[in-house]
Length: 333
Image (tube, rainbow, N blue to C red; front, side, top):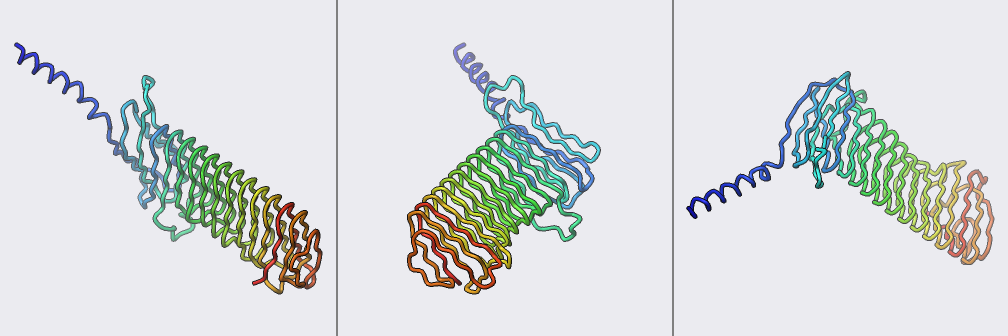
């Protein structure tokens, strides 16, 4: 009898463990769609990965943890909707790990709560008509990593890093707590409260950070950057407009000044260093409360204190630099 009871006990335990081993459900569904349509993806927790292919289909694969009731996958009037539904009886954190393959020209809209998001196009489209119209990604807590060739991009997260590569006509990135890194856009705007921003290969850029460094290289013609507590370092090919401001940090700017270009740089507690061509034509206006002004352009200055004003060439451009407690240095290349 004892042996029979022991056997029944073991069978009961094994039966009780069976649902746990089968807790993850596998997904693999495909729907026919029209190229250039809209694909909307919503996930509460886990991850979303989007890849492009050349088929007029959307394929959904992935795994669902327990308490994920289902994933609704619908196609209607050129709009594809993929939405994770969590069981109302769920009492523990649960996740869905989704991979979505879709036509390369699809407009993509992703909304997540506690999930990382990755979108990757393998190569730029040969035909501009196949360029994505737009990519919109929003998540509360999770990293965003996007590589695509697109008209408009908007990436937002509260807690997580954000990165973009490829090419965008307009690019907007925002995170509260995390670093931002991007490359390739005609026009870009990036904001973070607690994090650094790095970018390159952008026509015009606007960067803002409360507590972080801002670095921008190979900027086409317009650069605006502001930070409360951080350094700013910018290189511009031909400066139409540069507006750089930080409260506690250094400012560095290098580039050629366009014929009527303007540069304004300021810092409360830090140094400002500009590197400009020797034949620059501009009006210069420098001011510092408790620092020195040194310049290699036009006049030889090894340490003027206070204010310094002079004009080079025909004075078409304008350069204004001010500090409260920091040095101003102008070098030539």
